Length: 368
Image (cartoon, rainbow, N blue to C red; front, side):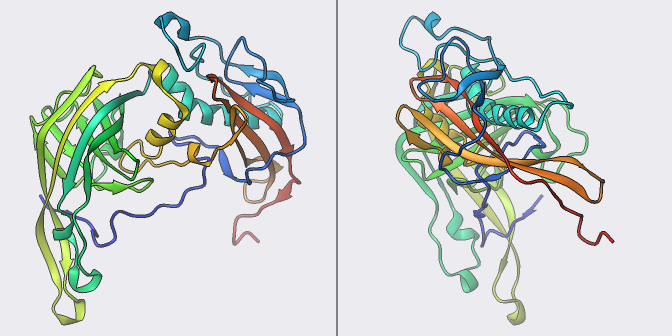
């Protein structure tokens, strides 16, 4: 069955605000600059057993304690204790407590879950190429080259989770089973490609076209029995001359001059030799790379927005909460808050310097 893609415009350049929570988070967040701010000195930390790392903020609020001690690995480790997932703020909590909780959820998604081993990172080598040159309306867009990841070092992210409706194209309203998604980034990080497997389709591996950093990917090709089973989070992932193909409809020519849809075969070839990294081996830079794309339509630049300050990475961001009013004209409380990560101990991260803005009524457009 052919799939319709506007491949003239792929990959799409998607602009996101850096604090992109993903995973269905309902927090509203927006960029608020990268400079520090005055305000509350209370801080919520995602680690345990360590001071605020030289900041002037005292450590208070939510503390996520648990997981494996880094020292138990028997070698150097990038963190001391893998933090447990943070608890949600009580609905009756203050706006500051809710802001701290939202910030900790973000930090847990982009850092904490990796330290707990819930998301797996691989390192090794890879190469890949697609035939994007054949998937372009050259009369309108002009010729374009194939996308290529030259053979060289690579990082990869593997996530195995319950299947979701978005794991099918078109979406499946009744998803069943489990989905494994492997995103392979060439280094230096300029392009990536994605492998996706579903337990509902044994032996089938979908493969995306190559896409630049922080852009969506089209799962335009597939192959059968061409890749290792990713569901069990294997210690090694080896791809040897994998070749995946798929039929896509591409509009060729000019509409007013007889242009028409053409069924074109898309193709991706790839090889990789990847080994699972211990959470202890992960660095902030590693996580900043793999977090740029965690799925075909799941892209993020949160960690890319952090700035180095001494031994910390910091990011001033913000968001808002409804604190009153009506359903059609809520009273909205904006805020700014700083996120920080200790480069000497990645499990020592948290929020601080909460600053409340002026609450204002924001009516839904068209409300009388």
